[in-house]
Amino acid sequence: MSGQINLEDAAHCLTLLKSQATDFYLADLLLPENGRNAIIALHAFHVEITNITLSGGEPMAGQLRLQWWVEVLQGQRRDEGMGHPVARALLQVIDNYRLPIAGFEAKLEAHIFDLYQDPMGTRTDFEAYLGETRSCLFQWAGLILGASANADLANASGHSGVATGIVGVLENIGHSHNRGQVYVPDELLAAIGMSPEQFLAAPTEKHQDVVGGLIDLAHEHQMKALNAVQGLAPECRRAFKPLALVPLYLKNAEKAGLEIFKRGSSPSQMRKQWALWRF
Image (cartoon, rainbow, N blue to C red):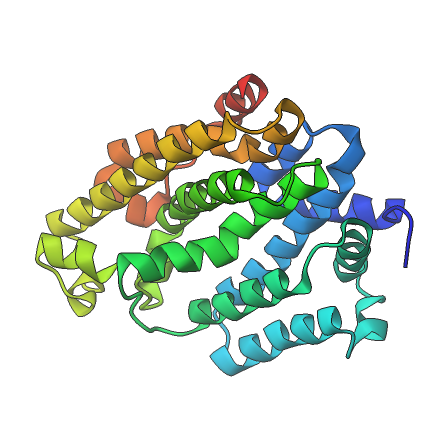
């Protein structure tokens, strides 16, 4: 397979982002034309996977759907993948930019956690989960825009993925709480005097302290990410535009208090567009 992404597939991916992942949609519109459709396809793939994990169906059914993607990427179901616009575009991107299949397999494997009600584990486990599910998106986007696969890109991608991933955890905290899922490291809960079981009870002031701990951790990684991104070539920094939205979300999350369990903390679209344009 060679050549550019089919324009109809690219349009399908962009429409998917516009309807279901506004942050990626707004950020990707500001990408350079060279590489834009490829990154849009990556983000559409992420939306497809999160749709599986957020559907609330039987975990085994979700795991089988994730396995379908693994088998498409490995070539076992390539013909089926060629009938799916996002899978078709993704295969084209992987082929065009020689992206390692192993990273996509690791992402899909990590998302199995989303289907069950296991505790998150340690802070290291939490950061590794966000690295495999979120940091990889920055890594691949950076490579598409011409970055070298070196320690600088890995460092910037790693911290950016954790920072934006925590924003995602905060935005979905009410949904995951209702489903009996805990996306909070054991150490953070223990420092506040809570167990995973207690976290799943009705929100209290201690839950607000948990949110505050997640906000602090996101700020820590955001600052490290911004420093690391400065070491990249200017044309590659655009891959990190979603990082510009982190402060907006965290400020709103801090103001929301326990209301975040009911309504999230998404900023207005105008504020998002302004932050992305300035990044």
